[in-house]
Length: 108
Image 1 (spheres, one colour):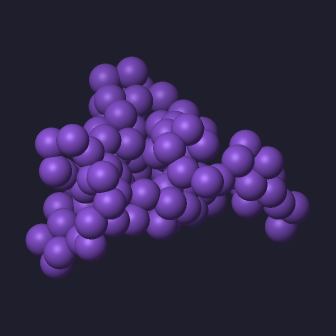
Image 2 (image 1 turned 45 degrees about the vertical axis):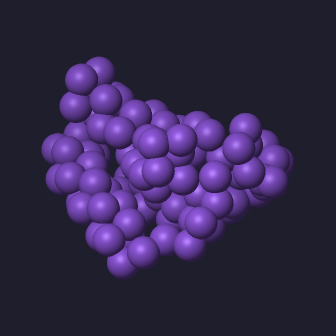
């Protein structure tokens, strides 16, 4: 379901992502690793902008919740956290696996 996000929606997403970042910093101490997580969040958040779940909540809260499970309950690192954030992008948006590959496998 697509509908324009409110300020409260953006605040919910920001708050959930802040909690994820705090957890991720414990497993991913390097700035480079946190940068990959940030890039994944920004990509997924943009892809899911104004998309809501059936419950009415912003869709992005789901990938963030999955990422929290990955880091808090399973104790995985930045690649898995990033994959959790991106896990519904190809299925639920117009982005393809090649799009994600191009963005995340760039040589820098």
